[in-house]
Length: 113
Image (cartoon, rainbow, N blue to C red):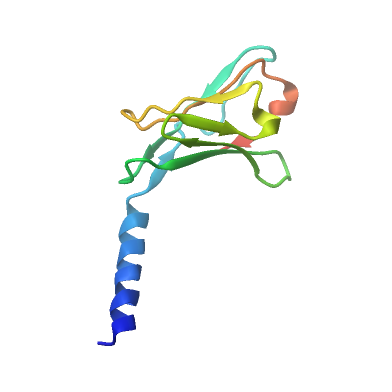
């Protein structure tokens, strides 16, 4: 077996094994919120990575996904458009990263993932 073939097989096996251990779950498909109140969208994940990079995106109807924030360890870096009313708290022990939207507006209607 050639040197490059061993590396190629290792790469494929590594990619397949890592990919099969990753999952994200949002326990609700539709969530209703009242204008002016806050709403929390729950999200849990499963990974073998001890310090995963996690992201939240917003996608409005017929729009493209828009980057909201990145969470790494306990650090959250929000995009400038999502700094004020959008927060996420990473809980490593329960492998969850819920998104909370404060002072909900009608314009917040979207898919969040």
